[in-house]
Length: 242
Image (tube, rainbow, N blue to C red; front, top):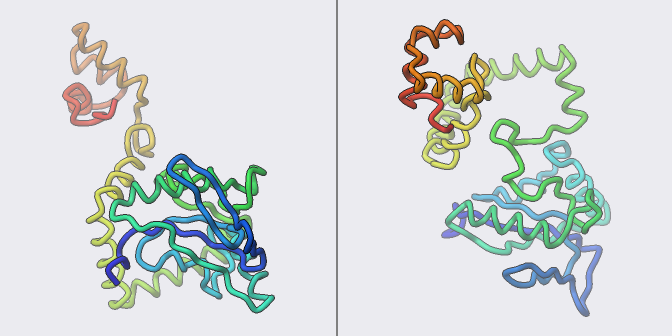
């Protein structure tokens, strides 16, 4: 239980491909990854989420190829071999190792190895697009009846006080994570904010013109924003990241 809440870097292996003699070896900067069975997925997760792909009712998810492989293994009355490679307190270190191992073993889609991963670790996903939707899911969301059904389900869920309490506790836990808060702030930062009228180029121009002696009123009229907006830009209360 002491490692339950920590971040685990794990690998799924196919029990149908067993190499007792030499095994499967993959070199990387920090050492060598040795496995008896052929790997097909490497991931990083906390709690017991390293087992999430093994759920029998989860055929459709972020990576359908992984679920399809698991189903094929189970058709032969076997189960994937799950091996935890390393446990970290620091999530960034765990994700870094995940990325290193995926590159070392190689991805099937890039024709560099056997892994079904579609990305070299978590960092390739933007905070806004933290998951990749399958083609089936994309088609479903174009269907009005499907959208309506999902909307009604969500409303029904929120009418349940136990569900609301559960979600509230989950969100509180998420906000305790500084990395999560940072990612959320990046979603709506600068030009990514849907209500933003300005661009990074315009912000830099505003600051240069202010240095040349332009008044807040002139700048506000030129860029069609309020004087207070110009003030906060100049004082770096907003757009502080550039």
